[in-house]
Length: 525
Image (tube, rainbow, N blue to C red; front, side, top):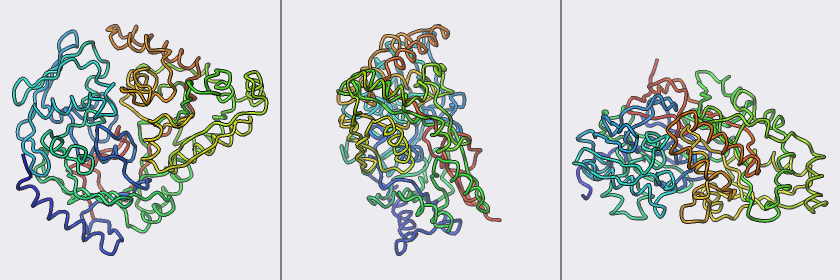
């Protein structure tokens, strides 16, 4: 279906956003009814929810797209999952067959018609296709996805999945795209994405901003806000200044204690320190020298001073990692005893034993995203004390994601949060199916496959206790092989002016940014 009546409303709303830019300086606050957001990035990634895994894009997808189910706004707990495009669902006793009953009358953005079961089937198959999705391995158990009728979808699994509802939330591969738009646009879909969420794509200005307009036909009701201006401001100081001067209403904060304490002192401002924690991990490419020698990987692990990281990041905003799976995930097992103690002498001894008495040089590609770059710079300094030279190449964030998936960096610093079940984290980062630069590759930058059997066994295990044992064994095997070095877990930091009412209590968001819903609004005293 081609675009029809909705484009008129979108064009009118787009005019409001254009006016808000004026001479290039964005206006913010209640007088505009346009939410201005400052993001710590120089640009967008790829504006296709099945392709982009970047922090920069995730929050935006949450505002534009719906899932069969969703996390209640303000929460990242699986216990808060509630209906979204599906009004109800049921599962067979063995967990292999799931049936979802859809809402009727849901409209795709910009006149692409009513969303039906055909769109759900198309979207989930697209998410499962490695040629069109970065999350295809998440859906390997989806044996069939069929439209029973226009408003009923049946999913049959080849084996039980510990987090089925998590896979069909409005998050990553669970974001539902409108089939007619995706087919019509092809690769251009990432430049003008079409969903069913409360806000619609309006305009993308490279290295400047992304503007969204209110969806007047949103199935929960038209948003109170007229639109969103999502501004790419990589400079921390420039972003802070824009927030303090009132040019932006909501800001992505620096993930460190000093920033939080300073912003909390501003009048009429709320700082949100929220779940989920993103775990900063140094993934070591075990397939290339010198990192193919476990003694070298052990030497790097011994050179890490986590207490120094905590002093650097702040103990109210970060916590020391205790495993390769983040704390709080179903299946997390405390592996603190396997974390090598900070010991520079032992690190140098291991390098000498491995035939590198004069040290080593490791090539690293890294994002310019300030929060992540500062962590890598601390890591670089710590490695240097042990004679490990990190040859660092800093690139723009989207380029970083592209190059690490081409296997161009020997160490990949990845900071990630996922649906809080160990299966997804272990599968995406440590299963051989996910090794980068392979057809099904996602984010296994270590090239480790040491726990494939345990990860797969846990997926089909129906006894919860046995399942947790398999996940614990998998974590132990991977840590004993030093596939990666977990460093710390960073909580999400955002701040807002108090005249912005989100419409809910914010404790967490799996998209890593506050949900902007139809109820979000500006309030005046």
